[in-house]
Length: 265
Ligand code: KIV
Ligand code: NA
Image (cartoon, rainbow, N blue to C red; front, side):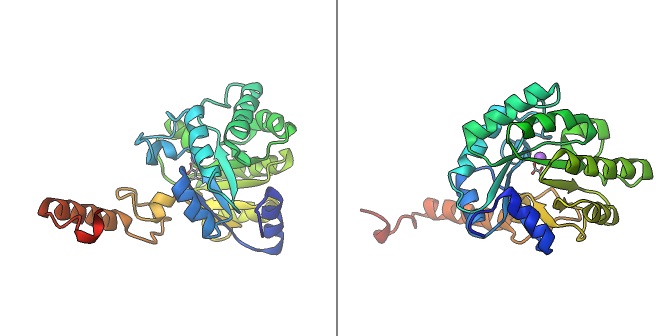
């Protein structure tokens, strides 16, 4: 695929081709992720944690999301760029949701938006879709509701919550979402959802029975240290490698080893 579109992703599900997705919040990282052939780049509101150091995703603003998204879009040649609508930018009414989505599309050049929730946000999704803006859903552990949940543990283990999740997934497909993220739910339930709907289901901590996987890039690179959920596979230990590089640089500066004769004018 030369350029990934929302339609590409639906076609990939039809063909049984898995979808790869990672986060990025800046130009330099996005360039590497895009050139590696990752299908979807998510400008996640996890930037609130990863970039800004907040404890939750709630504080990040629409302006800040647009700044991150615009930086990412400048780097992209192939990947589809999906941008999270941050907490407070879509929950109060559908018109506000549409205004926020329009700002993201106009000011960042992103290709689609993502928002959390099912039935509660149906009217907002409809309004955004009516304006021609593709929407990705997000169910299961939805971090913008962390104060309602009270915990980051796995969701929908009980039948009532699992039933609501299935209903919501069907509703999101009917409403017109092009894909759906399922976060931290039992693998069996996630597979059931992926089998029930025709739009791709992209999992994080949702097992292998779904249509694609997403991870937070800084987590899979091992740049973050304290976050150790079972679903996280670390491909590098960059925290250690970077720390060692910084220590070595400091030692070289202090010893006078850096710069040497060839590293000066
Ligand atoms: O903000 C984010 O990074 C996300 C993914 C974890 C799905 O929403
Ligand atoms: Na998010």
